[in-house]
Length: 259
Image 1 (cartoon, rainbow, N blue to C red):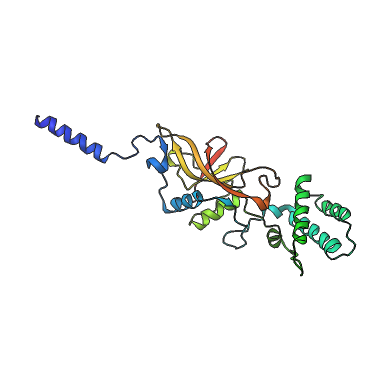
Image 2 (image 1 turned 30 degrees about the vertical axis):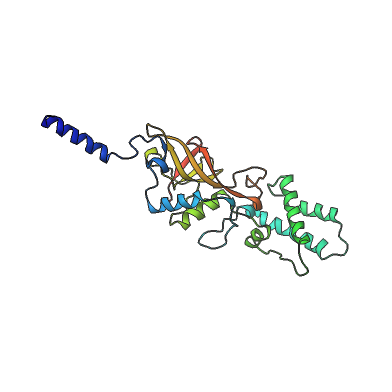
């Protein structure tokens, strides 16, 4: 072998030895290493969100992580408390309870809300179920929105859950109207994925990159990804769940950074 050929072979072996494992980026970032989470905040957010499963945590009340009282906004908390007090006064503490009439009065308390009939009846059933499950003793009657969220056992909706995960990991809270990361080469697990119509918030836990370095799809974690409720849309507030799911794309979504 000539010196030139020997030198060429050594150079080729050196290039192969130092070539990154993601020279061909096709696949999930967590497996190829291509454009995977880079910062400590991104890694903490992605790791925490990836383990999401089961019932969504109850809405918090600390000033650090909330509260986000979406379910009681727009006067709905006041309406809920009126319905609670109706049942307490006319049935729980009464020896002459006409349940049909009382339920009608409770239903009327929600006349000015955006709740539909099904949601109003579900709230009423939840109230009645609480009182009927009580042992002997005084009931818990909420006097403000925070206590009303507790009374119903309301769990975090999508945006609230995303913010609490980001904040707990050392990131910053990002509103729906926050500036988007528009350069796909800067997308990373540990960032947020928001609907452009502000209807849903998710956390990116992994990214599937095509061989040309473009995004094929995201693996995301989110809360309240379901149906059957309105105001806000999703699952019943006390039945919200966390899920990690595959298939979200850039269509109809924007990426936001929590740093």
